[in-house]
Image (cartoon, rainbow, N blue to C red):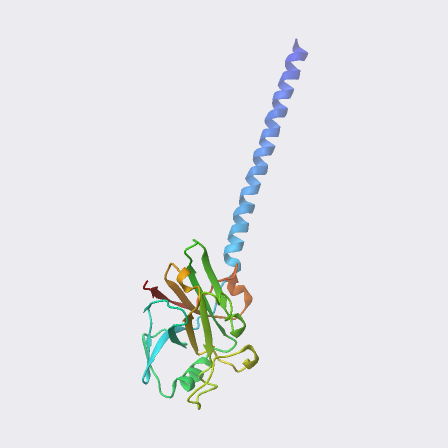
Length: 224
């Protein structure tokens, strides 16, 4: 009988020990997961504080755009938007727009500029895409036609065309953005969000979405 009791006690102690070990293992896992989460959160930090905005040009001043009204019609211009490295609501220009842009932009070396467009379709599909240069202006071309201009390179011309990929050089500037409605524009069921942002490396994007500090967005209100 004593042997039986001793055997039962031994089994109980063994079970308790196993449970304690399991609990210790679980306790050790939790700090590891928490540490991984903290590491992921602090891994990316954007130090780019370049000011950037979307403006309309009115004589010798730029007026910041917040909301912009339009009616989408096939091949109709939605708008031409001036880009400028500023957070001010109004910018007074000392020179023509192209020269003023250049004089301000060179204060922020090694910074690149891009655009993002967001809207929803009547099929419930949500679309978001980046335009980092002329090579991307044909993306989603069936809904919106987009063009980028370099007003500084063409500052002495009365008429000039949008940038093509073959036009790009190390000194090319993205100063203006033109948007037109395309042949499937009637499928756009929401307002359009147009954003301009600046970036210095690929880590400013996560899942193809910009996550840095230097961004400005306007709502293009779709008046149906």
